[in-house]
Length: 261
Image (tube, rainbow, N blue to C red; front, side):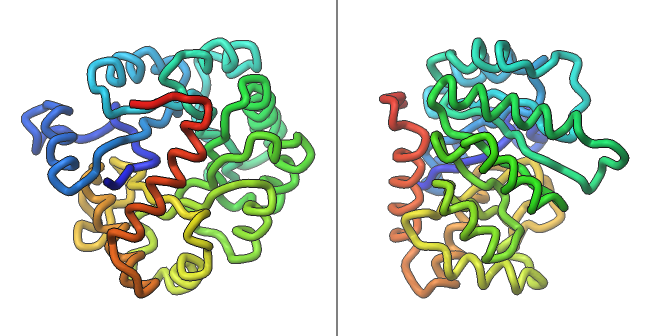
């Protein structure tokens, strides 16, 4: 079995699936993709994610507010902790820092990040980290706030080997999306070859970042198969080995508290 460790099922373009999420999940399952982590980016929309996960027994949830999202509902430690107690929530996030689309005084973003870490520690649940153009500050805040107590995953990893090492030293896994299959992702491919198999995860980040051979098209969870296939070729191992390792890693990271679907 393959697990898509990061996707946004509420945002998928379901036009090719007659508007039915169930058909998209069935296509994924036909490719051996058996479970999905539906990741929150907006607390206001969290009830919609709950409804999806309660309808389909193959879906886990996270709760969090993306660092680039404008918030209609404040991501306080108290609210994150309350929502994070839902039995299908296995992680806090995605959270982190994004300096690419945001400028000026970004202390509000760093404060939001710290709130997520505090909630994760209160719940003893791992973090899902987004970082873009903010690598040093991201690692620094993870250290300052004691995020190593819960660990987590550096999602859609596009950073250097040095950042991967720093994250793994804090107990984090490294997750690769379709970006790793892009022809110009030479440095990232080198990192994907070096990350220990027992610290590796794979994802689609659907509906974004479709891998080759579907680059440029709307992404969906079935395409995590192509990420697994590419990483297997890159490392000179079988896709079955990648599937087994990443599934085991997912269970260790997100299901250690006994949540199972």
